[in-house]
Length: 351
Ligand SMILES: *Cc1c(COP(=O)(O)O)cnc(C)c1O
Image: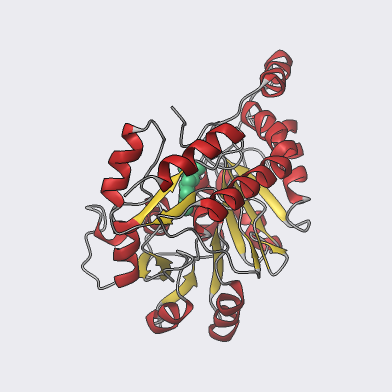
């Protein structure tokens, strides 16, 4: 069986956890601070605030940016539900728009058309590790005075015109086990805004900066030192593992002949959280690959606006097509050359 994804936990991670456990101080402490500092070096020195999940990072990033009840936040419908959940958990309304079918990222023209007097933020998702079109989004936010929030949960180290995603607006990363790097569970808020950073830190820790002098109503969304220790080890290996993903993707794209391979424009560095192909016989392909013991997955079969939790009827044709035709196949860094060749061989024999 060639698995679709595989978290890579080695001796380094185990030793890092043991080192923290041996100190007896295991809640948020020096490891979290070091992880934030090290992550910040990949984020042009912006503030990094570690939290317990990517969803918390999105949620606190929005709250710290002042998003509240009555606000509208424009997001793509073709994403993981957490993007929309984070908006709804602020009491704000997610406004779902369509994607560009070639990159699976939010369509800037659709965003422009969805802006109302209640719009307060737009939240592009760098889906599958492919950066969103940040020039138009930055321009729209500047012109309209809107907050830009990046859902970078799947896009560690991706760049748009050589600038790292996560540094355009306030951003959220995830360290869930299947993501390009993991801390077990975890997330990171990244922002260059001192006030947003201060608020996010307050919200993470019961509204306290000074102990027992709680300034605002907050959460316990702290990361533990145990998780941060894992994250620090993974971060050290991230560049190398990302390069391996990119090489695997290149091999697949050069050799696959029966499906549409993912497109990455020359302006971006795609980090292939998923390698996602399209075909109008997606379900047949899935059955075939299952039979051949090749892992595959559909991200995401139901557009978020149609989920029972949001239940909206909207006409988003590209989103609909993507939900019907997209299929992800293995690209993870542990794939051997033999496995890559087998994937190509099996896929190219499909008819
Ligand atoms: C994984 C993911 C999240 C949420 O991250 P968690 O760490 O699982 O809470 C948010 N948005 C997208 C696009 C994701 O893939």
